[in-house]
Amino acid sequence: MHNKTIAELISGLEAGEFSSVELTQSYLDRISSLDQHLNSFITVTSERALEQAQQADAQRAAGQAGLLNGIPLAQKDIFCTKDVKTSCGSRMLDPFISPYNATVIEKFNASGAVMLGKTNMDEFAMGSSNETSWYCPVKNPWALKAVPGGSSGGSAAAVAARLAPAATGTDTGGSIRQPASFCGVTGLKPTYGRVSRYGMIAFASSLDQAGPMTRTAEDAALLLNVMAGLDLRDSTSVDKDVPDYTGSLNNELDGLKIGLPKEYFSEGLDDAVAKVIEDAIKEYEKMGAVVSEISLPNSKLAVPTYYIIAPSECSSNLSRMDGVRFGHRCENPRDLNDLYIRSRGEGFGPEVKRRILVGTYALSEGFYDAYYVKAQKTRRLISNDFNNAFENVDVIMGPAAPSPAFNIGELMDDPITMYLSDIYTIAVNLAGLPGMSIPAGFVNNRPVGLQLIGRHFDEAKLLNIAHKFQKVTDWHTQGPGQFV
Ligand code: GLN
Image 1 (cartoon, rainbow, N blue to C red):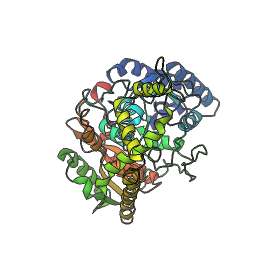
Image 2 (tube, rainbow, N blue to C red):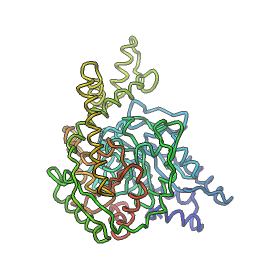
Image 3 (tube, protein in one colour):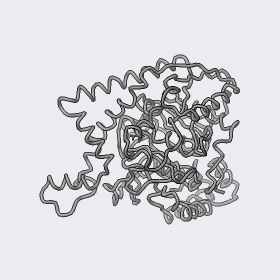
Image 4 (cartoon, protein in one colour):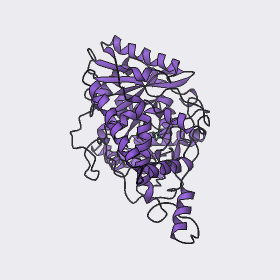
């Protein structure tokens, strides 16, 4: 059962081949026997999952099955879940029980989906390797000494190891696409505003976006059908019709114009990864796509721009974690200052502290214009590069990450190199565009993802382009030996 896609599981449930309770139990069994090797879950909600599954079975019997009726899913621990711990990977929030559900969680509940548990992640989604989690690193199911990527590494590892048929992730600078690439799963970061951020703990509010992490593009379409749409509780969510994302999966790609940014195929890209990406592009040429070189001249500004904007926004967003309004409170504070200082000092890990310091500095009087305002200007330049490119091409392709998964510990003392692992994904968030990573091959037995970048709200086209590739290749069907 665990090798079936969601589309197959839906057919199986419809045909009565198995019930949601049986399906859910089989995933819970896998989590309990296998997750000890991976650490991909922070919380497993077995009892609740079985209750939800029972309800789903009853709804189906009554002819009231929603779109994902009875399908078990894993949720990144950044989404507030009523009555279930939401930690965001941090000691700061360790015992936090949200009084309400994030909109994404509500939507999945309404569709009849079952929550298996909450997945591990980098602390407050800051990281590229899952090593900043207070709950210890997640391991990559393809190579246990390698990182799964981050920050949605728990979700990516769980899906790759078939501990859940799909999971949610969030992507501020690459946190869906980079772990999808490292773990060989399909990850979609939608257009900014496509999916509600209500109840999703904010890292950098102008960049954060939630999306599906699945084994196939078809499954990503099934999840996005449920996740997307206007939410009046999120003022940045966009009032735009949600198409049926499965409707155009099989459109022909004849004449599709693919742009390859020369900046994405230059220095810094691992040669073997480049070869995997070039081979993937040849598959598209065989399907009738036309490939041309393009330029995104301001690409080199993306990482520095992001590392001003994201820390600035996070320093503001995390100010509410002060031991009074939210978060860990230190023992026996002497006075209010001591309470703030020790609560935050104890609650946050080193990477989060580094970001808060950088962000507070960039926003401070005297430096605001030199850093924050300037970063907003370079953000505009980066965005304009994409607008110009999309006048001539329909989709931009390239690697999702410059290398396959690195080893645990390898980059922990080198934050700058770690930051560069998002070099191809970050600009997409700065421009608010949709992006995907799909499995395209292996280097030294570690997966490599092909990145697809589309115009605003072109998720349906990206899913179509990804699905067609998955019809003619089998990278996405392969699983890590020990777990399949
Ligand atoms: N790795 C990037 C960072 O550390 C992106 C994280 C994310 O997308 N949440 O900020």
